[in-house]
Image 1 (tube, rainbow, N blue to C red):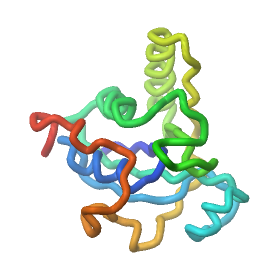
Image 2 (spheres, rainbow, N blue to C red; image 1 turned 135 degrees about the horizontal axis):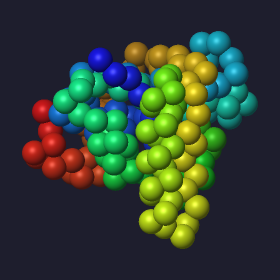
Image 3 (cartoon, one colour; image 1 turned 60 degrees about the vertical axis):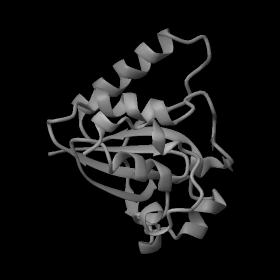
Length: 164
C-alpha cells in the first residue's frame, strides 16, 4: 500500500477523478500543510492558516507514482499560482506532498522532466507532508453525493481503459 497527497485546486474534482483510477484503493479530502490544528473549511478559506485543499490517495503497486503524477498534470494547470479553474486563493495552490524520500525523489524528477518540456515556470510545490486534517464529512465524496456540483476538472479526461 502506497500513499501520496496532492493539492490541485478544489479538492472535490481531484478526488472524483482519482477515485476512478485503476489501482487507487481509497481517497480522502482534507487540508494539508497549514499552521493550525484541525482547521474548519471557513478557516482554510480565510487563507490565514496557509492550508491547501488536498487529497490523500492510497494506491496499490498496480499503478506507479509516475502514472498518478501524469494524471495529476492532466487535470491541473501547473503554471497557475494559487488558482485552478474559477477558484482563487492560497488554499487552491497545487502541490505534491510526500512522506518518504523515495516519493520525494520521484516527484522532483517528474517535475524536472515536465519543466524541461516547457518554457513556462511550473509552480507546483513539492514538500514534505507536515500535516493533513480530514475535511468535514460533507466534503468527502462530494461530487458523488452532488453530481451537479461545481467542478473545475474535466472528469472525462480519464479514459475508459484507465478506470476501475
